[in-house]
Image 1 (spheres, rainbow, N blue to C red):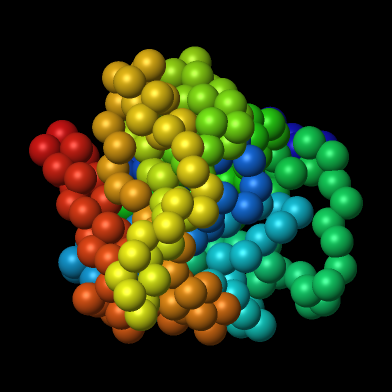
Image 2: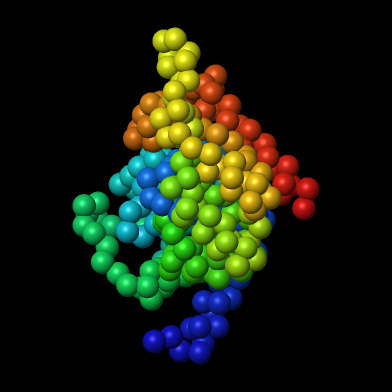
Length: 275
């Protein structure tokens, strides 16, 4: 158990870290498998490509995927001396990433933790890591509105906004709507909705096919008076980039999906840089 002195020191460290971060964005989804981590990674890459200093924090404790998706799998945190805190891993000149995957020697070993342990490690991510000055911190959360997103919002204190990710069908948005309500309840502005797996455009004939047909995004946008920031079609190159740890938009800049990611980043900047 922390002593009063330790608690005060840790709280001071956390506030010093957060004081070096201008904008904090949480990425949320109601269900797993809708592409939340893909959105987190590509929004982070998009902001970094425009010259902003970006941190990418993976708080999906049980299913971390960020390390593989940004190409830092197997790397470990580094410190310059025993008296200093470790730094997040540098992905490129403008992008830094932190995930529990870099702290686990066996990637196949499950993390079997209850809520208090998860909150404890998220707190350590924010107080025991030497974060640099950042324009943006993108936080990739596990699906739902449980321990991890609740801990993140409470610990960050002043979250700039949330991105809500879902696939188009109404059944997926049954849960995504709860994340909208969660954001509102926690006084986190919803920056907008992102529809992933929004149809498939045949590369041979150009015909669009609605694989996950539905109007859940439009209905939620109407019901909650929110913006739809972008609609990302199914694109095998996104899968390839994620599996290889490459920056998708950099490798496939003329693709429909890359242009949608550019549009999403444009709108995030428009909403937050004016503040």
